[in-house]
Image 1: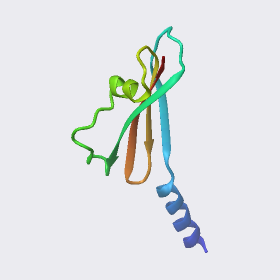
Image 2: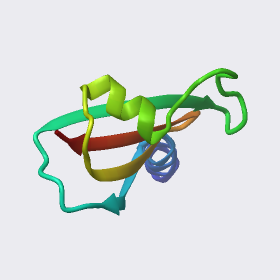
Image 3: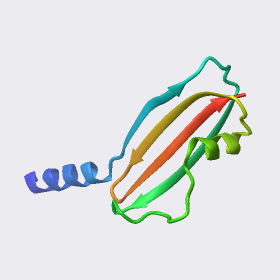
Length: 90
């Protein structure tokens, strides 16, 4: 019984995910639209070679010309991590 509990705890720990978000840049412009740019990393080092996750790419995704805020979010799982740039503005 004790072994089953230990195995179940290890499985839940390995399959759980974590997400961290932090503000990167803030201006006085009003926020109305949202744009995102993201990419996935597999096993900590395998990532797309030609991917743009910059502020300009996220703003273009949301049709934003005046940036209000920029946030960076990192979400992780067992084998993958997702890096996302979130831009709000007009």
